[in-house]
Amino acid sequence: MSEDARQAALRNFSQILSCADDEAFLLMVWGVNALQSGNPAGGSDVFPFGVPNEVITEDMSTGWSIYPWELETIANEILASPKSVYQSLACNRWETVPVIINLLRKIDDLDFLEKKDSINIFSELFRLGGRQFEWQRGYLTVPQFYRNIYIYGQGVCAEYFKYKHGIGINELTVVGFGMYASFMQRPNFTADGDFELLGVNNSMRDKALAILAAPLADLRQLAGREREKWNTMAYRPSILRRFPCVRYGRRIRKIRSPLPALILERITSGLFYDVIDGGGPVRDDYGRRFEQYALRYLRAMIPTIAAVPEASYKVAKNRYLTPDIIVSKQPSSEVELAIECKSTRMSFGARFADEPATERGYDDIVKGIFQLWRYFSHCRRGYVGRTVASEAIGLVLTLDSWMVMNNAIMDEIFARASAMSDKNDPFIETQDRRPIAFCAIPDFEMTLTIGTTDTFLEAVRSATERDHLGGPLYNRHEKIVDSDTLPRPYPFTDLAELLPWWGIFEEGRIIAEAAGAP
Image 1 (cartoon, rainbow, N blue to C red):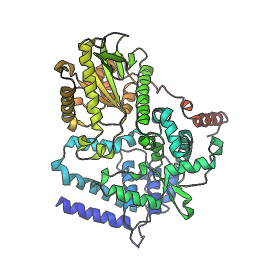
Image 2 (cartoon, one colour):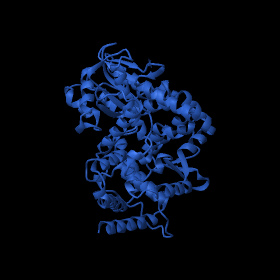
Image 3 (cartoon, rainbow, N blue to C red):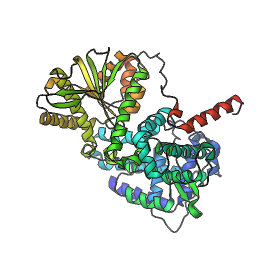
Image 4 (cartoon, one colour):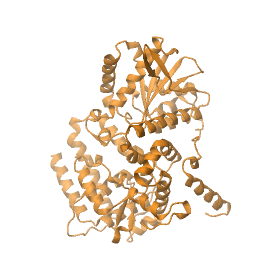
């Protein structure tokens, strides 16, 4: 019965979208987003026949809220939907919006009901988190920019990006940020926008636009090809993550971005798409920079902590590296925490497949556990020259949210790590296989905004407990630290170090404020 209802809802949804003009539909999505992200005037202009006052809200907890991940789904579905000859859907009337959103939510519910007997609820929570967490954290943050530009925007990565696209990452982010600022106020942008004041000539601008925007016809082909492979609508790949802007009109000069925040995602964490095909040297480069960033951040947030980078040591005739960050309470004292950083990005299957543990990237998580256990074993056997505290543990720190809310595959991951240990080093004993916690870098950043060395270590230890594995580390730390403690600010505020245009932007803002401009 639920499958019959699901198929009926899918047919109804497809029929409605087939009757929509793509450009008008994407404008409708932009309008809804504007109404609920601080631009009620712009959003209201999209719906000239009026909107209920209750929908003008930035509060996601109200019954009138339409979540940005829902808007992302319908924006992708319109690109993938076949077109009827009758373009009759009234995208400029608010009444159309709840019909589409309520039908989407019905499909989401029926998708879950159809497979509820064959899935693990924790697997579903993991997939829901993958769909929602980034939107809830937001993209317009200094950490989002600084972290990703630090990792992908320097050294070998930056050189490869320029070789591939003919422009630098600084120029791409200038154009992207400028388009984001424009789209937050108005729905349209033209391909001849002027960025000369920020050091970007027209040739550079055009190359940046080729990265950020694609013609409507091309996006329709890409969306149809990519999304048909996935059955569950909510977990189909988002084409707007690769190309957040759509080009249309004569000579494709007009540009629209239904969800402007995705431009910020594309010019920060989305830089991964531009460098991943650069081969081993590029991957090694951003891997090292991730390790450096994590260590710099840890030291900046807790200056009293004794944290050192990886070092080499010798076992017989072989050389080994320690984990990427070794933490102790005092310099040269017992090891309290060993951190292995993994910069592998999650494939779409790793994030949303029914059997995510089979995806290749999880091998890196397994390897990280093995490396931590091997290090503890080598310490015990006297190869490293350091002793390990009785309560010492390991932490796998990831760039993506590999293990967040991912309890369903914990047993398999640890079983695979044990098998790897047995095969590669039979002298790793049970006592060496210490508890391991998992944390993604945004959670790591939040966790270190409060507390001390002792409370941080206590929080990581509690996060290794079976009931808390994969849960947010910040929540564990928050329960330990005095609730009246004020959070420490993000330590790396000078983005102009990495993005010269940011300094120009900040200087202009300061001058405007001094002159009394709004």
